[in-house]
Image (cartoon, rainbow, N blue to C red; front, side, top):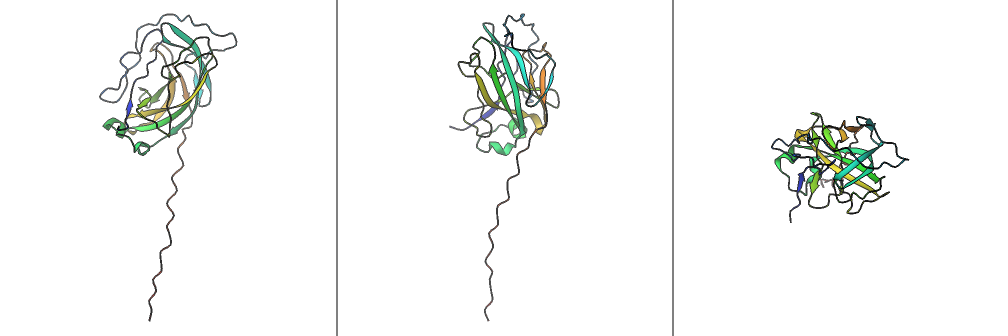
Length: 220
């Protein structure tokens, strides 16, 4: 079976599904649905201080947010964008790439998710987006097999109180673009919480050591 990488929409909801978030012909994503979401009834633990919508955070900071993957489930998540590393399309040499992916610039985003609330919200994608220089929301890429440089995983089937997931998400900035921020924005009306900071670059590969050549001598 061929290994394939593709960009897909995050299935994130706040009482409703984010509609029309698939990759279009241009490789960009549409905005989240404009339909109003119902008032949340999620219970916030007394010890948790919620992060204000519109907050600008730095890599390594944590945000406490209400997360409702469907109308029947909701909890409080702690999201921490730990680190962002700029990759190279050469990192995907073992994969079959479409034209959009070949032209994109990959970024690897390390995220930690902890369930601070009382409800199980397992089995769904981590609710984090990339944001490029055109202020376009970028969904995390999906893989048909393991990708060692950035192992991505959804929330486990059971993700209950105090459960924690450490994962890595791949975002593809179109046309060799830049990743400007990482965002939590469940619906369009929500003033996004964003993380920014210094993006790491991998150390250059050492040049192969040249073996000394044999000296040829002329015999008289």
